[in-house]
Image (cartoon, rainbow, N blue to C red):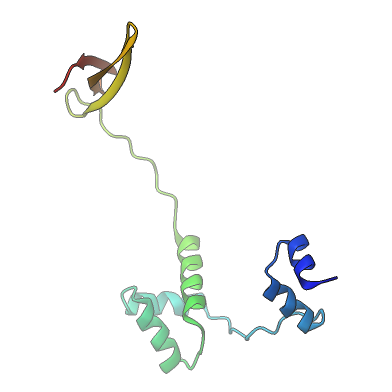
Length: 139
């Protein structure tokens, strides 16, 4: 079967199909990435004040670990998501007049047989759950 036909049937690029054929079914060789102690990453993160570039440099200079920058950022993201605790939802106090939303949106309303452009003035008071709507020719 032609490379073009294989790539069309598998929805892959032709260069990808050629590379797979060249490997003759063997798994691709990947570079070895050493496992880093999560405590070391936490300590370096605190020392470097969250600057990932400096963490990467310290891993290479002081610890002799040669890892790709993208691998380090992935590990730091995973570490941050594992350490993150869900925050409790905090309710906003409902006080009269403390929060109101005002919306002025243009509308086209069919009055009779002709569409008419009007400006809406909508006020929503969260405390009392009241809405006030007024249509004006313009504001």
